[in-house]
Length: 434
Ligand SMILES: Cc1ncc(COP(=O)(O)O)c(C=O)c1O
Image (spheres, rainbow, N blue to C red):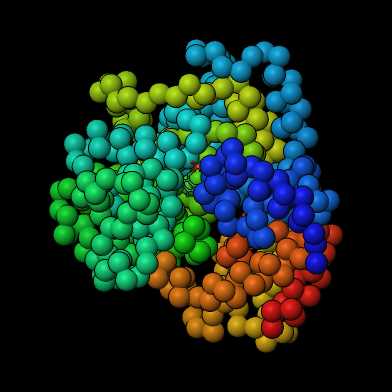
């Protein structure tokens, strides 16, 4: 068993000055306490007790090139002496905007922000200003940031969530005004009939629908065949904007995100996380006529750190790596992720553990169930969370870091030797929980 004595002592000390001892509630979910790390390099993180972790959390997604990737660090280091925030324009913004418009499906024009949460708010405001409607439709189990407008029915208890055919919007936190629920329609994901019915119930009211094109936060689940295309068509029929939240899937489901992978184009898309390989950057992009409302209708969007020098430099350097040879790194990522997924599934069979591995090669989860593969939030929460936590804990003892639901992110730094090492450790961890 690893020792976490220094993390435990630091956590006790930190709680006295930092609320809850963490800077994001998500970080409470760690055993035995929120761990303290000293350093990250490539696929590994090193904690203050000297334990090495092969890291499959990767900052919850951004570290697509692993920790401290040299080309990105070098580019950011070279930019540091040029300043950080100008409250004015600079040509790195232009270079990055042009590159993203060339690369990403449906992106005619972009606007930079700093976090995914606020970029989602910008997309909501654009959709409302463009359509003159108020309601946003979101899907159960999908996460779009922690704001009052978005943190609705993300992890609702099924006692409160109402019928699957017409879920009740559930506020995700104390302190949220009830009025936000009136402006939100919630639907079950991955079922076109449910979406069609929701549109019918709220005819002419819905400004836009927002979804994770691959549900990741509610348990990595690919869209059913034809689902994204069908949602696209329904949005057109009902005059609503199709907003894709590619904060996680962007530059992870492939070089052109989930939309490139599945051949669908949204009206507005939000990217963040992997786009700057660990530096804070988010963006909203999409149709020129919608984005032009920023200027034409005076739709307000601001942010002191938007387009800051280092985030632009980081994203440009990350794109150099991700785009090289037509996105060659993604072929390796897919191959090694597939091998890891298949290896974990075969270990579960070997140890007679009822477990499915589901998602994409660069983002997947071990679902503990002897039933069918989950297709939506309600089926995903029905899987055995205690078993997932036990596997996560056993993996941590073996030097493998996943999140507590046994969700895995992969980076280009996880090479074949690391995958072999991970599977050997997972074999022992699986034996421990079998
Ligand atoms: C799909 C999705 N959208 C939005 C967000 C919010 O992004 P941020 O944490 O950068 O505010 C997240 C964060 O995990 C996310 O997973």
